Image (cartoon, rainbow, N blue to C red; front, side, top):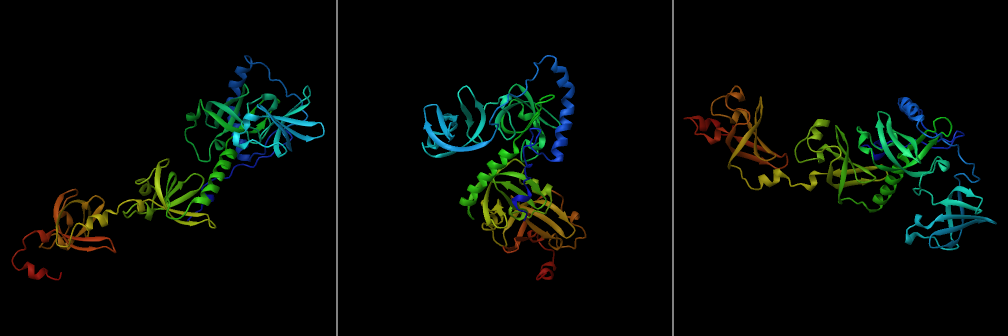
Length: 402
């Protein structure tokens, strides 16, 4: 069984360049350029009505990570000392009350800029969603942006009063066919690239944040999940051999043999008869192999077995009423209870010799049959139509043992 690593794409590697950008894959770069080209005419038309973009104000610190000692935790601000005459400040609201650092403890921060008037480094907690400021935008920064539109290449957003773009491949970990559903939403994302020259293009991404969130959930699941647990998950992908279920950070596979008590042949259409992508389902954890990254799940284990339920209430020799569901060359299948079928062999259709099943039965016809045999191991029920009829003279003795 494929492991979760086969179903989740890896995020693009990000790194800062001399052009204030993160390293993006050639595919993503091509995607960005194509989408930007589509917007070029619209931007040129809007340029005459927009104020010119100002260049960045030169700052001393940039977006570097620094570690210092907490010297004060006040009602609104936290002060951190990096060294002699090097003091940083960050907003207390970036911490929950139970997360507040203690005076004297070490604290890692991100330096946004240096304020010469106050002789302070203005800092933030790493990963904290911050208010966007054009002059402070840097690759790797986490911020919130409002989605203003969509096109075939991705999402159009607004950041600090400027237009931004998010490639379709960076919107989600899974493929999304209709990006327009994000219009109007405020998304937490990271800055992948800032082009302060020219049009001032900003490129954003959500994949790093989503991957980190997924990894955190996966870590917790690995610690708590055990075989036999019943959990809820989302159908993530339909395959010919089953369905991958996202349990919230980890994917598990429900094989076709564990979808339902029915016999299901491999094939995506057959699997889709029982589950749909995006659907929430209850599953039971059947087997865990973290070393091989394999998680086997089952759905039928949480359902009553219709075969056992039905056969527990009937006995061999009983008469049942059922519907003809399939006509084959060798006989006909009769549904005697929801999801439970038995077979009337062609030799059990009539006391006379039958050449074709269609001579006796029609599709969906309701008939009465007699139970000849119930085989729990093979899950088969043998039925007879002729045994419900009076045999002609001499036919009964001839049929014994046959």
